[in-house]
Length: 118
Image 1 (cartoon, one colour):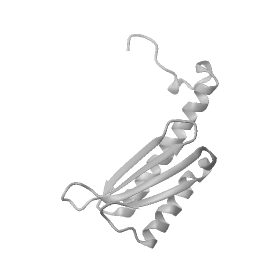
Image 2 (cartoon, rainbow, N blue to C red; image 1 turned 90 degrees about the horizontal axis):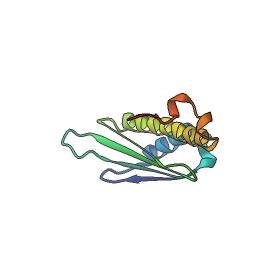
Image 3 (cartoon, one colour; image 1 turned 180 degrees about the vertical axis):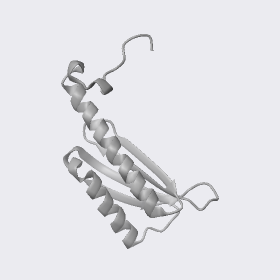
Image 4 (cartoon, rainbow, N blue to C red; image 1 turned 90 degrees about the vertical axis):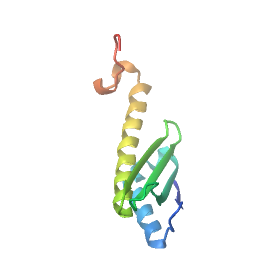
């Protein structure tokens, strides 16, 4: 898993870089062979409230890419929530790929397309 951590409008210190690296490897490490690249963009939020933004892009080798983002006044909290969302979204995307790879009849009920007028 290739990891790129970028700081937009904030300076990314060694400690912050190590924290993001550790969290991403902890949460996404089990999917390592299916992930091509991960980018984490850390920046100040656009509002005047002093918020910090963590935006994560996970580029997969075969399935659809995953994005997650969170904004908080505390950068560590924003990182934790964004990484958690990315992990859950990635697990769901890969489960959908596996389910549809075996054919729609084997897909879990929650992942099957609805039939009917909707």
